[in-house]
Amino acid sequence: MSSTEATSSTSNLDTARSLQAKLDAANLKILNAKTQFKSYKFEGIDDWPLGEETSRDPAIIASLVAAQISFLRKLKFQYLEQKAKDKYIKTIVSDIDDAPLVTAASNAELRLRNEGKKEILKAAKSRIAEKYQDIRTLAPLVEEDYLQTKALTEEASSLSQKILDARLALTRLRQAHPHPRLTIESANAQLDSQIAEMQDLDTELQQVNEKIAATKENIKTGAKEVERLRVEKAEAEKIASACKEEVEDARIFELYDWYTASLALHKSLLSLESSHSVSENELRLTYMIGQNSPSPREISITLLFLPNTRQLVAAQVQGVEIEIGDVIDSYVQSNDISGFLWAVLARARKAV
Image (cartoon, rainbow, N blue to C red; front, side, top):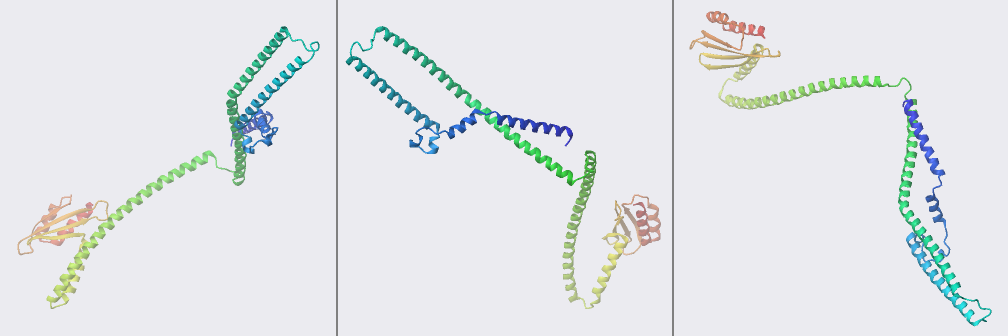
């Protein structure tokens, strides 16, 4: 936390505390009136057929007050009526000399006095009605301001507590991590190095995934080849079991195994992929040169012989980019088949 942020948080905390102190010293009338209303004991309220919760309901209290006011008005009217009757009777039965003289002037004076009192009463009632209207109008506004002030006070208290907690947590962090601490520049440098490392790891992960995919494909291909060889083995075993019954000499099977192993060794040494006899005097050989290199090459060699002889007449080579026409002619003339094959394969391997 910088010095500017610390100064700002301290000023906000001081402002919140001063606001709380002003609210405590404001002596708000609403809170005092609420307390006085709850603590005030009405005269004769214990005689009312109401419970504690019901007696606090303003609507019920208003209806009871209205009923009592109506009763008091009737009682006042009866009192005035009885007083007037008593005065009238005393005036009639008393002596004329002692009776008060009632004249039209006195009646007019009483009437004017009553009218003045009525005007004063009417003005007072009008002022009371205006006060009531003002109270009804201002009460929601005062309540809204009070709720807003209360919310701000609670928020200020919460913020002050959070500020204290943050300062305590910062103090603990400083004690747990003494100098030198991680700065913004060192954090950015560490972030850059981590980003570069993550990019390298992503590249390595992609390469590993590609190798895994290639390995899976090789496994699938090998499984297919194994399945094919298993089928061929089953067929060969069937043929072998059938031939055992027909052949009298059992050594032929050992010779067959030796020939098969020798042929496989010969193919692996010379990179021979396949050999196919197209006709009686035509042999087609296929070699795979540079299997471990990035770009292996397939070479096809076709040998033509004279019918029913071993005399080489012609040879055709496909898959070699170099010129080997003189090699073909020289070896065909000398009928050196093995030398021809070794020469062609040697030159093809040099060119890969």
